Image (tube, rainbow, N blue to C red; front, top):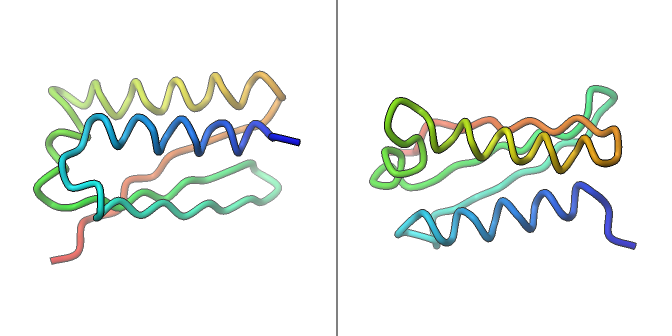
Length: 86
């Protein structure tokens, strides 16, 4: 059975592969606890601007869509972007 978390991760991977250029540098870590699901995302430093978008609108839109996917099953989903490694 496909869960909302699986749908959310699939959506996140699909979206990032469209937006970002260095798709090999995409690392997603999923943590589930009593507060919900947390995705920790790390991308190449050259893609950070593309991920965040003008005034942070791109990353905020991705977070909003992930929350909507989670709300379909009363699940809380959050996205945290980690600093790129040098």
